[in-house]
Amino acid sequence: MKTVLGSVLALGLMAGAAMAADPVTLQLKWVTQAQFAGYYVAKDKGFYDEEGLDVTILPGGPDIAPTQVIAGGGADVTVEWMPAALAAREKGLPLVNIAQPFKHSGMMLTCLKETGITSPEDFRGRTLGVWFFGNEYPFLSWMAHLGIPTTGGPDGVTVLKQGFNVDPLLQKQADCISTMTYNEYWQVIDAGIAPEDLITFKYEDQGVATLEDGLYVLEDRLKDPAFEDRMVRFVRASMKGWKWAEQNPDEAAMIVLDNDETGAQTEKHQKRMMGEIAKLTAGSNGALDPADYERTVATLLGGGSDPVISKEPVGAWTHQITDKALN
Image 1 (cartoon, one colour):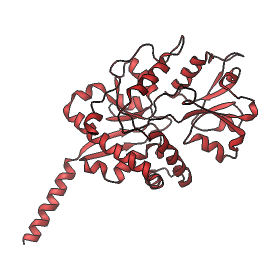
Image 2 (cartoon, helix red, strand yellow; image 1 turned 120 degrees about the vertical axis):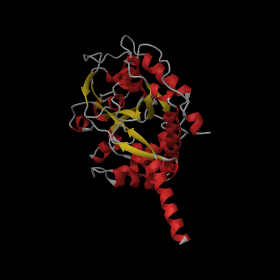
Image 3 (cartoon, rainbow, N blue to C red; image 1 turned 90 degrees about the vertical axis):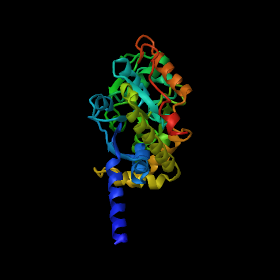
Image 4 (cartoon, one colour; image 1 turned 45 degrees about the horizontal axis):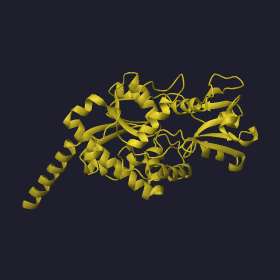
């Protein structure tokens, strides 16, 4: 009788714990892939459960703007690049960076070597593929730093609004296209173009790298102690997931694949992607480095007559969450 009663009580406590889990909705910047492995690992390995959280991960896509989702109340926290977040903040959406899992930038321009391009100065008079929907800001800042107009002409560049694929390079509609070290570059390689037939320009090597995948929330919500507590637990579990993914890249990639409901991803591509992503998260414990933030802001402000942001942001990041999550 005691054994039965004890089992009933234990089940009741477990059910109560499950019911008590606090919900958190995370909006990703793009589709389910190893770029977001840390969050899927944290969910799969029970790191969120350990923190008393019930986390829903919403994939992104070409028709989904993370800033619009969080502005409309569709998510508690979103993954976004800092240039897009700061541009949105200046336009009135009070996004705040609460954690920065990515330490390094994976963005670059990839060009066909046959074009004769050997340096950024050779971009003049060329057609360059550029992503939009908030992803264009690092490119526009780079061109502004080089003093290269983005309105075409022999001294400027013609901007081709690039879809989220590599077709413009393969079909020679553009001399160079936007790629990430962990994704589109390898799509070019898989399409049959040898690495020696390409030339790449990494934003980080050009001194114009800006911070990528950070975690952002709406400023007013941080005034709520209950929300702050949820974010502290969420960031702590997420960073545990990221560090596990760094140490176990192949297993992390398989966890991502298990969560890909579209079936569009392949094991080869995701394992390769996770290996590259681990290089970008290495060196971050989740807390934003103020020097990295200041470098990003300086890059965005240095946009000549048409900068991405027009003034120094105020209140755009905080250690309020990571100070408690990581100590």
